[in-house]
Image (cartoon, rainbow, N blue to C red; front, side):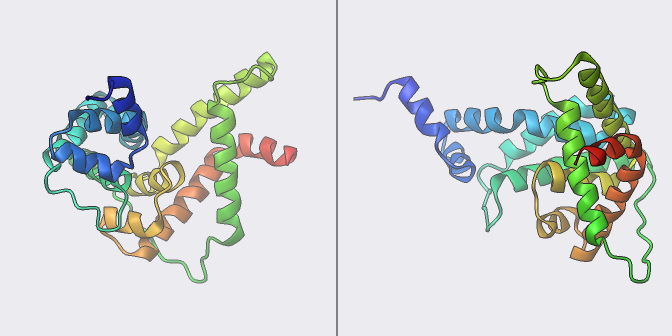
Length: 224
């Protein structure tokens, strides 16, 4: 006796991404539908923020090409210890970076500084970024006054502007780490650089964001 469609869908929802990809490679189209539904929004947002306003017209194309690559690789996909999400976002990252390089955007050159360590400053900036991002982009603002809502929506717009101003590789590392939760090791593999280079990109990216968002972060820190 066949299971009802609803029961099959519910079963798929409980399956890890990696198993869904394997099921898709074996011909289960519903497995791909679940994967797409889970990650469509986050992947699109990542591509849009990485490409920035200058390449906004190419976001849809890069997003679609990312899924085409994912589909094309379904039979050769092997997790090898990495999450499916990390693998998929690496594909999108590489495609987006190809577009950015084709535009001859400024390369990310990290200049070493003696005794330069992210330390508490980096941690503080990262926490402030997450607070600004949550406050500025939250949809549920029913508890806030109209002035507060307008203020934090402006903070959200400023945050997107600041992200777009980062060098490409710094912005990519930052988004992968702070928005998508990828480890420094995973980002190093995605960007084909060493661990310390990723740390430097994250450190300098945070400092630039902190300077760019200074007005809003001062308000947040005053509320802490």
